[in-house]
Length: 142
Image (tube, rainbow, N blue to C red; front, top):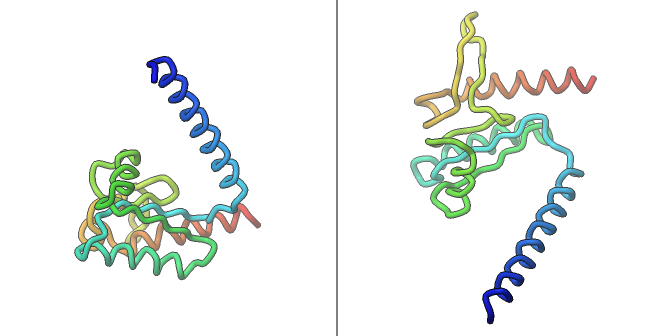
């Protein structure tokens, strides 16, 4: 095959991929979004599986209101998604952010959902953020 024919074939494949991707985005736009969207990037091995289990449990307490998407950084797809996320360590995005201000013992405190849960951040911190975001969504919807 000539170089020009390969180039044309490559361009046709690229165009087809762009058309397909834009069609997928349009289809996804019609689906309702949860008020709280959690995206977690961890190596979900035996040492980190409890984080995935907890996040799924948390979403289960708020059906239809909290969604969880897990990215296992031990897989090629998970590593690629992690690389695109902008993180340089494991972490959790809540509505697109890893950092929130919460109130603890009457004081404002900044919490980052980075690295290991129960060491660098606590479950109660995440639950406080989720509850605040659900309250805000409820007010906007009312």
